[in-house]
Length: 247
Image 1 (cartoon, rainbow, N blue to C red):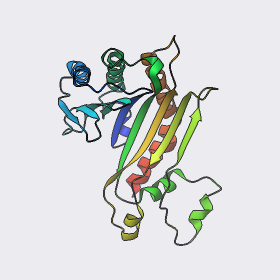
Image 2 (image 1 turned 180 degrees about the vertical axis):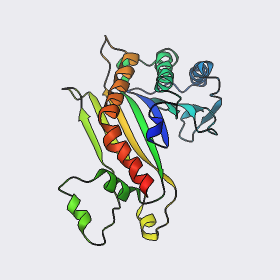
Image 3 (image 1 turned 90 degrees about the vertical axis):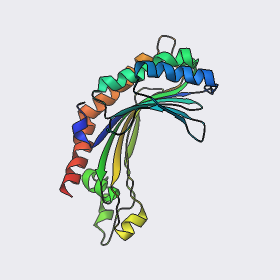
């Protein structure tokens, strides 16, 4: 089991490559791309097309651990839910980036953005927004609002994006996504939903001639892991897990 699995109920590691030009959609090219993926991962045998024209190849989801890959109009995506190790997931994403230039004619010049996302899901039946406010706190300028009698938090999804270079082409973002609405708060009827923390590193724009997709992927993944290990685990993930366990 990967070392982040103990921090949440479900962990996933995704890669998204967005392009400036439309990707090929003809039958032969699409099938060749997914057959190249399936050759490496034979258990990815569920292939289908969504209503908007996206194509999906994925493993069975019955056991809670599965790989998936999608081909959209201007985006190639790859994900692994509850991977056995971080390296297993990264190897899958490297494969996608290795075959995309040959099967889909994707060029580093055509790169609009490449991002790596580490996702952490917490299962919680209750007001997600209130939980996040209690576990993570608010900024001093707003925390007194919660001291008012009868106040209930309806929306609180803290998010922070920072630039990692002077040109703002390499960015890092951490965000919280809640899934509680006003109706649920009003009725007190809360379904068992997942509260998510997303940790994302993104490279914008065409890659330089001396760079490539694989090196960029590894650099972005290293950024996410460093941020998680040095700050996010202790100050976001663990407080959320503790707050849920006490409810």
